[in-house]
Length: 487
Image (cartoon, rainbow, N blue to C red; front, side, top):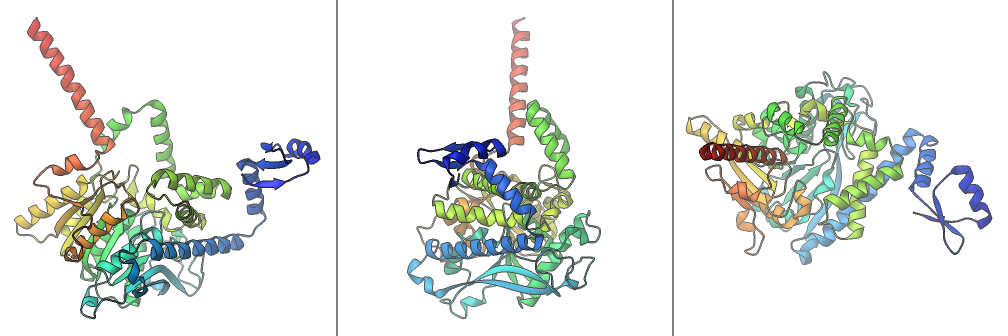
């Protein structure tokens, strides 16, 4: 906690009056626990105007962005001595309100930050000036972040990817997240439908593409960004050179009976927690709403704990602190895009319109799946898509070529957990395998015709539970048969 000087005579009175949990040291100074910090944060929140709070969040988020850009340049270049040729720039692209299906197209458009005549799509642009003009004909790589993240979640990848294969890269804050405009999600017409929620992101991305005069792009999306990338490719296939899905959400079919059996087999307290979560999910209560309901000191503590637990690969305390602050300030800004969650997904992260049956119908050349070895997303979803696409082509119908890659020693946040191998996989997916050096770490590649993926990827909890139940049933069957034989 923070150390503040307080006269020893005041200590007892302060403690009795406010009932804070405090500790004194030998010098008469008092260490105040997070309870006191929480109260201070709450008082500050109550007596600070909403506009000032938002302005402070935006300022802190911009500061975190600048720090992550600097970390990207200093620590994550594949050719450190040639970093002077790489230009990183934080950019804002203005798009018309009319491009996005929201009800209030008047001035401000119901936006909670940056209210003005136009909407803003924020992002980072990376250009490696050392590539020749011919090489610069490669379509730009456009990257979309996952749920509750932002464009700088790719800070460990941007410079190296640009130096190796992609001369121009854009990583975007999707509309409603990060430092892009945040229209109130209730201004989306029929905002309870899957189609209207998808259109919110798809049409804003298309307006951004048009404003930046990009004819065709390699589109890569992580998690929820992967889902949105598929929805975009459905409507605007002529704008997508390659579709790259980074541990995308919403691929498998929702097998309700299997999920119900799995939940029923859990301990009572776990079942109760899951039911509570499903209720909150159904009510549209998001993780960021939960964080915003707390004093900021406590919510920041939770985000720092999340980064500590989920990303042990980030060992530098400064880098860890900057990333935690980036995520925290992102969550503290007024909710917008986050409210798509219950419109697009069912509890359990199953899509209401599974991508399993949508991707085979896409009119794009190729689709590339990247999964982490310890991913909680089921990589079998990508394998199943690969099989369906192959069967459609065998029947004479058009269907994309599908490739599935596995990144070792990584989970769902594969771009942060094993950045080097993730970069290699993304470069291979972008047609740049020839650009990789012989000693570059290579991902595993999988095909539905063999089962080698089953030994590589961590089994999903549902599948593991099913196999355990089957094993128990087989054991009981063998025992019964043995008894009958003995008799």
